[in-house]
Length: 343
Image 1 (spheres, rainbow, N blue to C red):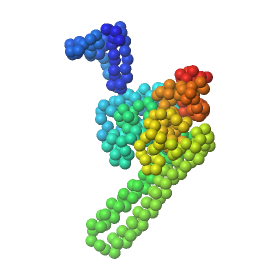
Image 2 (image 1 turned 135 degrees about the horizontal axis):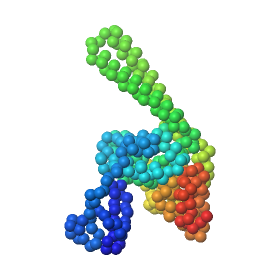
Image 3 (image 1 turned 180 degrees about the horizontal axis):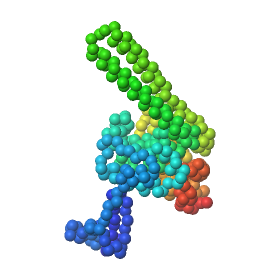
Image 4 (image 1 turned 90 degrees about the horizontal axis):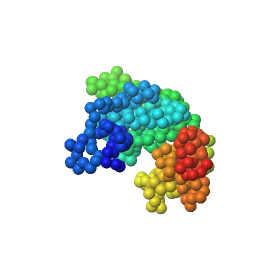
């Protein structure tokens, strides 16, 4: 950059530069190693960080934060959502039926999730992201959003899932109330009436618990099975071939680290996968493709150009599938092809 170049970095780590701006951030006085790029703070700068209310107004969706999210991470997350929302087409906006939640490290640990978890998608049309740079980035945002679109295309309506959640919440509250009542009875002197009531409550508790487990199994197992057995997913698997749980470490034979069994790192495209993590199952395969397509379209250039020694028709067929079902927009699809020099 030239002697009078200026660099702007905002609170969301977005960078802009210019060579003829009269006001710029910083001061020569505060920079002992000043070499032409100084640091000044303009008195006329007015910070316009988004708030939860402004993001709800923009998106019409719920934005929630767990306990333990720092003010800085909260500002980062809200700013990113504002930017990302404006880049989405109508199909992807509609896939986000409810909203986005941001979870702190403490909240994720309390849920039993490890350090490697950066996002969690739900059948009710919502998803959670880790509330820092690992989760609040465009690739992960679109990865989890792709899962929501998979659920809808796979025959799971968010309203159905939300109904199950509401029913489970009622049953959980019933169980808690019953346990409180049993505990109260246990503190009283034993009487025939108390013993009869305790027996009745214990039976009622078991009935509520059984209903809860049945609904939970339907939510966690049956809805997932419905999506995985849908014609839409089978179409993807016909393109992918027999690759899942075959070449990757994650989720295979007790292994939890990323990478391929042959020793190749996670981010190497091979076997028709864009990342080793996609080899876990067809839904993750789809979502990792979307993630890479929106954040680094150049990755696909040698994979979809027939003149490249790395060409594999599976990659082009998968890109066509994602475009067909609107996981990627017209502009995102065209950018991939243009970067690869193909039509």
